[in-house]
Image (cartoon, rainbow, N blue to C red):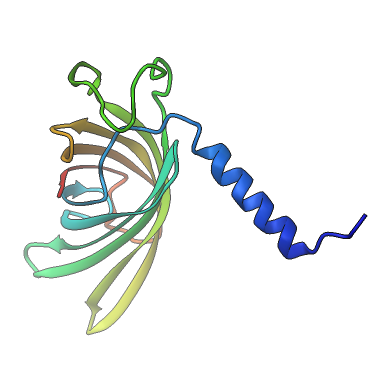
Length: 179
């Protein structure tokens, strides 16, 4: 028997797991790109964000968020929050009858995702023109409400368990729509 090369084995495993993962029912959200407004959360007062789904798997996806936020009205201090989160689909039960390509109207319901990730808050001119970077850990609950076949309204409740920025809030919420 011939010895299989590492490349042959890795290609076979890649094809096998790709075919195996396609057999699962995936969530029906057609979300790829969206905009959101966040109150508290990643930026101390609030932020306007652009979001992009970077990687979609049948039961999860990776989301990249970047925006511009406000730290202080009095000092006119701005921030630039960026967050990368992993979102895992929570309500997977009772979805065996749904067809992914053409969901029926009665089956369009809210989908819940557990969100966890890491981000950074860039604060230019915080101390006499010195730019600062702050690391942020993010966890939370993300909910998608399908509006139509291609549009989704999403809401996020976030908890910030770790940050070194003293003005950072521990809780936040966001509301957005997919484009």
